[in-house]
Amino acid sequence: MQDTNKNNLPIGVFDSGVGGLSVLRELKRLLPRENFIFFGDQLNVPYGEKSKQQLVGFLYKITDYLTKNHKVKMLVLACNTATCYAIDELREKYSFPIVGTVPALKPAALKTKTGTIAVISTPATSRSPVIKKLIENYCKGVKVINTGCKNLENAVEEGEPDSPVAISLLEKYLSPIKNSGADYLVLACTHYPFLKREIKKIVGPRIKLLDSGKAIARRTDFLLKTGNIKNKQKKVGETYYFTTGDPTKFSKVASKLLKLKIEAEKVKV
Ligand code: DGL
Image 1 (cartoon, protein in one colour):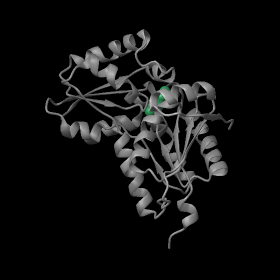
Image 2: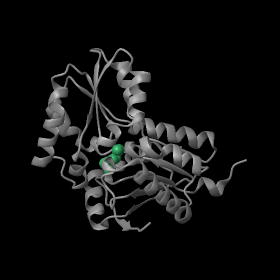
Image 3: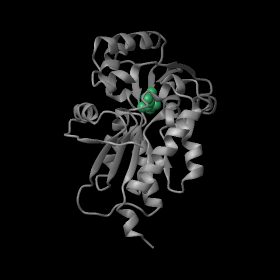
């Protein structure tokens, strides 16, 4: 039996900041009839420099807020760092489906012709047991250059992917990769797809970029179908944006990144 009330409820999409919009963009493309609540925890960005205990604490509070105030039917963690450190705890506590963002190492290892791939992520993701396991399980016989990029998400948070600071950080992190023989570069932070143009300029056409956005949207669709909770409304769904930081700044940067007029509300959890 289909519970139509539940079907109309929104999907929560979470990130530390505006990076998760790169995932939201894919979700909206594949699932235009769904309603979304996008939540950016900008009071606490960057997540890549927090401990597991801090991250689990933030995520419990935020998920409680999304459950109580918006009755989300599903949660998408549009953040690699939060997925690496808090998804198991969240799945234990909440009964609705939770989709995580996992670095696309498996497809990169399957596609590589040179036998070398690279992955860039936040410092926390880069040293996480999750990424180590992915490398062990899926990258046998493949050389993986695993680089944690402190401060790189900030260029996106500021809405300035081509600022001199952003370019010099990118040059620092990408030069060793450019000269490594790698043919695939995995973008394992949801902020980085917004830096694609700048990354491509530095690494050149020989290195292909992979992120997880489309795979997350497909996984979300699959779980909606198997749970029989897809929104059947005829109109295009609505999306509401919330930040724990400055809503004026969020709205300005988000509108620029998604090329849409976005107005965020401030929320305290
Ligand atoms: N967007 C986040 C990720 O995918 C984290 C950025 C940060 O807050 O450090 O890991």
